[in-house]
Image: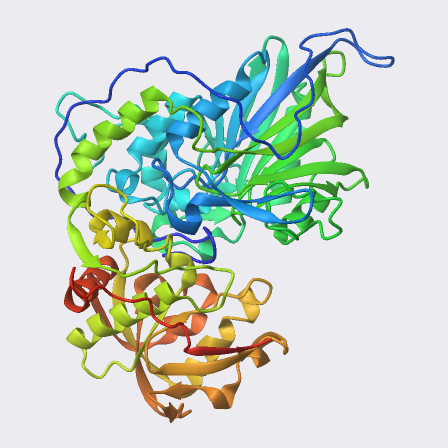
Length: 606
């Protein structure tokens, strides 16, 4: 299962489809259009004589996309928009994303560039919508091949189906259970290296995959090192990473920066699947001029990362920023992130000095560009999507419910309508397994999209399809029931805002009948007002035993909820998506669609 925006993993996906279909179509030519950007890109000049003190200087371009999460089709609802800030301070929302538009945008950005590399710092796959997730993310890997991806760093979601499946995505071959989806087709794997420098085998210390790669472009050599967050074991299912150790990000980058330097590669860019939080949510905000800059784990990582690294391309937090942070020598260094789901891409421009074989640090600039939907679609990616949609259609288009309005999961607020709906669905399912179940708790990061009223295809407005439900809950967790004392229930609530979650609280979504007050004027665990907790209107009793429904990820202590792992008398129920489907089918129809819950179960004091 998952944690806060894009930060956690789920269980291995079981076989969802026994499919046969034709292979993918060949690549076609396409047109392209100019893109809106955060700022005007600097004029590029190609090779040119060096300035005093330098040898011959060439222009280098790095294009970056992070946290794509298999969003081949344009994401819907708030997941498919970015915030644009106007000069007067007002903002507007722009529809963005979709791999057909992303391919066009990247190809246009590369036009005329002699030295260009396209990279991604993790979570290219995992927590994916049905079109990709149903086929174990093979469609996304093929899409990345088609749009010209050169280097990918591993993220925590690359472990959603376990380390063996990650290696299959790199090397190719048919899925060990679902096969090749067509008799005449074999999955070829990624054309690009997937880097995992800080993911090593416990027994040997050897990296699971390549730690770095050197891109050679007409005499220009640039090293790329890929790392995921050291805390990955805390947010993924243990079975998928058994026997692996996750090392400190900065220490690992520093080790391989020195190794590259010994090999004569002085230009180094780190792909870091860990990130920060900018002061402004606008993709085009001036991070350094805003006064707030960026906060979060990436600040410490940047401060400890070898000054020989020329830029840090980051992700994991799904935020947009192009900021300067000091390196260990006190010099500014660019740190970037392009939100998520292919809604933005970052363009980094810099000068490479052939004499020093290094990037001129003072030349490095960056811009986040919107992947708008006004530009032409890349026809080869449209063909790729259409082929996979044909395979998925029998499963994807099945109606599972009706809604009267958007039911949203805005992670900027503690409680959301969709969070309440999912918790209610899991409580209803749990009570079919154990009628004594008292409440259900749902982690917000396990909710990957809104349920939108507008039709995503031909099903009609208000109809919820299986594909839409899958996009909301793609992890295939089970609904588990455990016994906790009242003291333990309170401890779980406190773990939302303390310990591992102190800096980035994870407010669990709660089922109907469970209420409490969250006082954000307090600090740490005291933000949960202990005497406010009620279960079906009655005060929480410290010594009483309660039956609590949670998904299997949380039941294993995921997302920092260690107390849940200590629950007793466990009972494993059915699939969490099936629970949502059953709930919608039982409580909604075309004549009587479901309204959004009020999201009034947690009283927030600010």
